[in-house]
Image: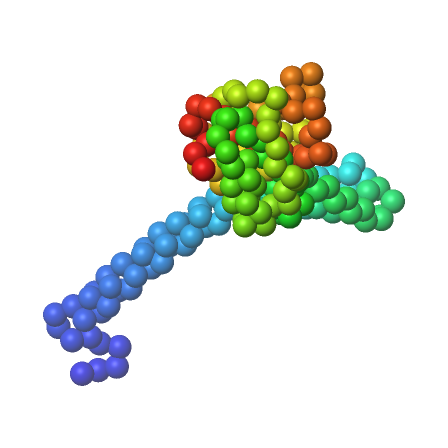
Length: 196
């Protein structure tokens, strides 16, 4: 066979056709990867904005969700070229040891408040001295300002629905005269909702 000649039967045609197919597959794959990268790039928290003087500033926002809270960090560079960092932390559920819970007997049954207090203490909550409510009434979990999430956690510990059990504490409608500085007040009521 001479140099540059191909065997009869289309050896050159076969190899060119196979290479063209591979080339098309590579181009299609590159387009798909590019589209994915563009989509992910749009989800980024980084933004680049022109300052008007030909320079740009980059602002990066990072949010980290956790059981303890949300920490947001903002890094930016202003017109003077200086960098600024601001950290804002919102309150999340506090550790049980940081939540003082008062359990009240509103069921009229002996030992209910003590058992509820012991249960919460076993879960790591700080507990005030258990006491009797002013009068028998339905079960409620009351929270002072800033302790709603912790009251919801206490409701979960008792296995009761938040929507119908957890409410903001109203000092004008307190189930007891001395709240002992509690952040969360649990009144075990005569309705059997909190069953201990």
